[in-house]
Every structure is written in structure tokens, then in C-alpha cells.
Image (cartoon, rainbow, N blue to C red; front, side, top):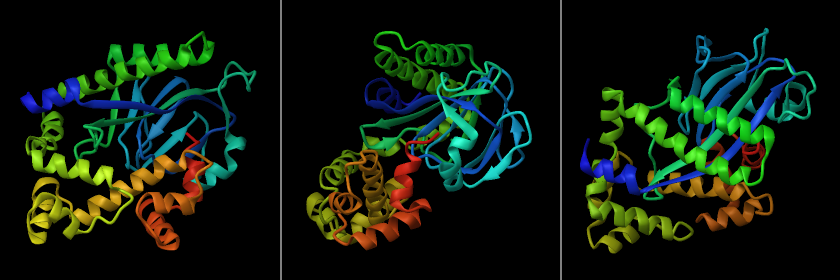
Length: 305
């Protein structure tokens, strides 16, 4: 294993659980365009799950992993399912699921554990954001054991269960990473993403952008920070991470906007200003172009499965 990548995994990861809940089905359904900005793990506690264009059935004693910003078709339930766009599902959610367990007395109802986790290296880059990682099935004993333990914490809610779930989710992430590492072609692809971490300039620039995300971040500003030419800034980014500087900055602005949308007290106008857009209407157009939904709809989606 590349030493730098090894160091990143061992000491430079930040792991945050964004959502963790159990859903109980009232009736089967398919989300045609399931999408989350975080990495998602779906574990059937007692139920049937199908995924992908061909609606492949997830094998028993398995869990489905969907990397962030990855759109997939997901079917919940063993009976014939109606297909919905995610936005329609949000509006019609009470027809299809109950949150948790106590709201449905039928012990035979199908149940699923759903966890959304943000995993970043240097608090900057999603470790699983790679063309080599999209949709994966895990059936390792350790991963399944951890998922069952998280399910039990949610079911029983003993003292400190939220803290225990956070600890177990950290363990879950490392078990998933170990599973990826056992797949050499996949591991090589992920490791490729971390070559640029050996360049202190790119880390310096990433950090500068993160600290100043609400300010003007033109190529000129970046070039002055690094004391290099504007043309070289563009070349530097494309060679290092494959994006133009402004594409990367917009991605980080929108990522920050998503975090702020999680708090209902934050108005869209305030959020747009906080992430560097002085024109709220322009921010809303760019947001919809990137995510396919309006910011208000995304706020509702963040609270869903």
C-alpha cells in the first residue's frame, strides 16, 4: 500500500453520521433516481431489496453501499412496486413507510436500516468519491455484525445509544475500507486519487478555498495566494485533480450549502451569501442545475431515506 494513502486512512479521516434510521414498509416502492450527497449503506433487516437498472436482488445477509453523488434505482419490498421519482416519494412518503419500529404493529413488515455517512480525508475530499466506486455489495461477517449492532441500538435505544452508533459507524467505515483494500483493482483506483496529497501546494490551496468559501475566489485570487500565474493555476488544478479551479470551487460551495440546508433556521438567501453567491437567484439556478432539485426541495430530501 502507498505510504501516503496508508497515513491518510490511519490518521487523516473525518467520519460523520448524517442519517441513521430504520424504515418500516407499508407498501413496496421503487425510487428511480435515489441520490444522496453522502455515502449510503442500506441493510435489509427483514425485507427484499433490488437495485440497479436490471433490478438485481440483494442476496440475503448482504448490505448495499452507494457512494456519494451516485444516482441509482432502488426497490424496497417483496411485492410489485410502484416507481417514483425521488421528489415524488418525498411528498408521498407517509403512504409507503413508517419511521422506526413503534409506528407499525405488524411484526412481519419489511424493515431496512439506512445510514448516510460523510467520510473525508483532510476534511476536504470524500474518500469514496472515485470513478471506481459507485455501487457495491458487502457480505463480510464484520460489516454485517456491525450493522446488526447498530440496528439493535436503534431498536432498543439504551442510554447513550447515539454515541454508540457514532462509534460503531466509525468501525463500519474502516471495515468497508478494509473490504475495498482486499479488491486490488478497486483499491488501486481509489489510491490513485491520493497521489496529489503528496503536493503541499494543492493541500494549501484546498485549505485556502475551504477557509474562504464565502469570498471571491477567482483564479487571480488563487494565483496571488500561491504566487504563481493565473494560467498555471488552471493547469495546476487540471493536472492534479482533473477539474478546473472554478468547477472545484463551485462544487465546494454547493457542498457547504447542503450542510447549511440541514438546519431549517438557515434561509436560502442567507445560505447563498454564506457560500459566496451575492445573487440568490443565480445561486438557486446553479443549485438546481447541479442537483436537479430546488434548494427547498433538497432541504426536505436531506431528512428522508
